Length: 363
Image (cartoon, rainbow, N blue to C red):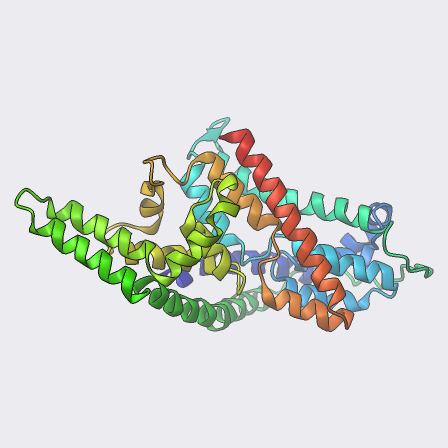
């Protein structure tokens, strides 16, 4: 529950700023000003609106692409909008930035952590433009493109409206995303706490045998028992199964479990890590999740969350299509499973390759 509530301020700020842009009448002018640039990559000035909305959530952003008259430009907009870093990715960026990026300042006042966060958002925009430019050569739809837009008058923002939107979006996050996170956390707790009876009995027997020794360090044995129990649980078996595929990216089996569960919603990553590390600590909440993740190690004693792993994981979340709702809405808008499957394939490929390169360069 704490993992859900802690991110409300950031999400409210994000939606508040977007609402102010819309309320002043400037958002429509952004479409007009960027039309020429967007056309060079196969898009339209109206594509900017869905793409900016994608910073909040890809689902309504993709639905808003309906006002693009040209079918090819509408399809390209739908295909690249999920590359915008939505608010669901924000909790992942925040916790990973806090763990692996030093809290230092450039010129005494510019935060390095802030620059990294801004860089993640910019990378999504740049790659969205690049993907659109490549895809425009492969989508063979011949249709004349027009750009007709009514510009609203400039006006002072309605602060009450912005405040209402912020509160409303925070409620939606807590009640809708929060429910998903809570349900997945409960399922994950079960998968992390129980496993095949043979394996769990063997772990229990080893624990009792070690505890019976006269010179045994009970604290150390408790820690080893919690780790062994988690590794042999159903969740541990799932994570270990995919670990060979994600190990080149610097990830361990726990991160593997988080990648699987976050396909329901990206922000589930934080709840998953909190559940896994809480289970391993046998319910003791004396350390914050950030501290637990910083202390995490591989079996050889090396740290899991190094700069290389953290940057690799953040880049993976920039590019990966980890939201089933987005795939469902793309299917509905395109009336075919062809385009959501193409979208899933190219985004997963991009995420894996970019993360792999980043990790191998930084390690």
